[in-house]
Amino acid sequence: EAGVAQSPRYKIIEKRQSVAFWCNPISGHATLYWYQQILGQGPKLLIQFQNNGVVDDSQLPKDRFSAERLKGVDSTLKIQPAKLEDSAVYLCASSLRSGEAGSGNSPLHFGNGTRLTVT
Amino acid sequence: AQSVAQPEDQVNVAEGNPLTVKCTYSVSGNPYLFWYVQYPNRGLQFLLKYITGDNLVKGSYGFEAEFNKSQTSFHLKKPSALVSDSALYFCAVRDKAAGNKLTFGGGTRVLVKP
Image (cartoon, rainbow over all chains, first blue to last red; front, side):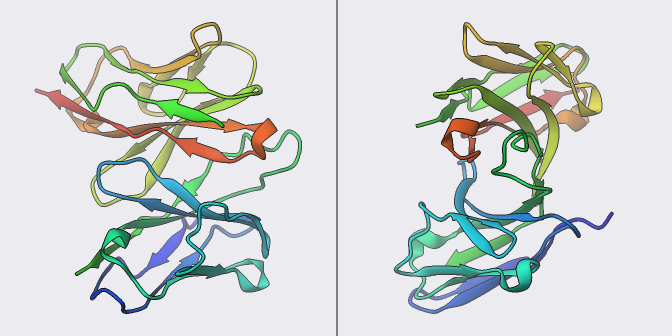
């Protein structure tokens, strides 16, 4: 099966500019996640979608970050305006399902990420 | 709140020797536990998981992990390490009582020397 696709692979922007990342999950995966991985740290969940609805966005800095998953398939993550501390790898992941009883054991499948450098 | 601790930033081991990567967790309910591996410039790859049942879980590439409820640990092990096992390893926990949110540890870099 095709894996999780992300683009672009790399992005360099200046602070206060805006940037958008795209993710196409594995076909049939209802749950989609965006993680932020700062160098030397573990991934931190930004937002989780179940189909096209938001399940958890408690750690998303909503003053500058936004995400959508129209039609419950592809997703975009946007940062506007970017700050220096946003430099990180942004990972998209998908899983069959999550949130229902007995379904929390579905492993996540990750894309290769987008490495963002804010100068 | 759930959390995961990986106490070692780096583990060095000689090829052919056993490898252990430590992980402890904290959850309010029953945990689902996972190990992922990350190679340079790549996303995370799933290695194995513990959901219920046998405390010893076998996964990909010869890795296994042992769930220890009393010590709240889920250490990753491999009997004989390969140079190609050199990578970054992440432990993660999911707590059904916390809405199935997956929380990762800070990662452990494994360096296997020939």
